[in-house]
Image 1 (cartoon, rainbow, N blue to C red):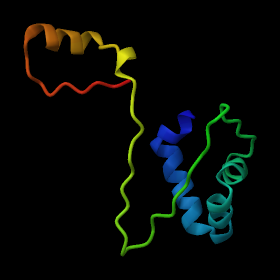
Image 2 (image 1 turned 180 degrees about the horizontal axis):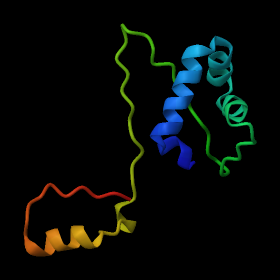
Image 3 (image 1 turned 60 degrees about the horizontal axis):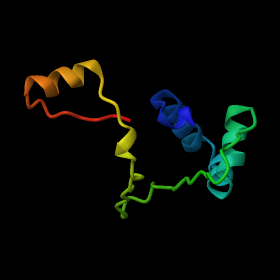
Image 4 (image 1 turned 90 degrees about the horizontal axis):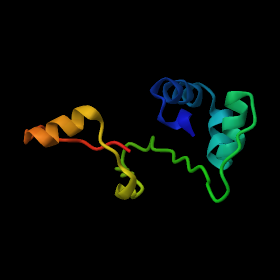
Amino acid sequence: MELMNDPAFLQRLAKKVEEDAQFKKILLENPTAGLETFLGRRVILPEGMKIAIVDQTEPSTIFINLPSTQNTEDVELTEEQLDIVSGGVDGGLILKP
């Protein structure tokens, strides 16, 4: 879901949660229904996928999000990254899927 990586979308969603306690409750109890309410359209997830929303507003708790493992077999370097690698420059290369 592209929106989950869109900072503007996430900011609007966070603002809505902050301003609307009932919406926050719906979003936490049923993330898909909450997102559908927020977006005003149906959310269709690929088979086997689900959305998990965690309320991280408890100031006495440290939350750590463990990222999914990525298949590095399918990672392709950009032209710029290839230039850095082939030139032998140690520029702290960051691979992005």
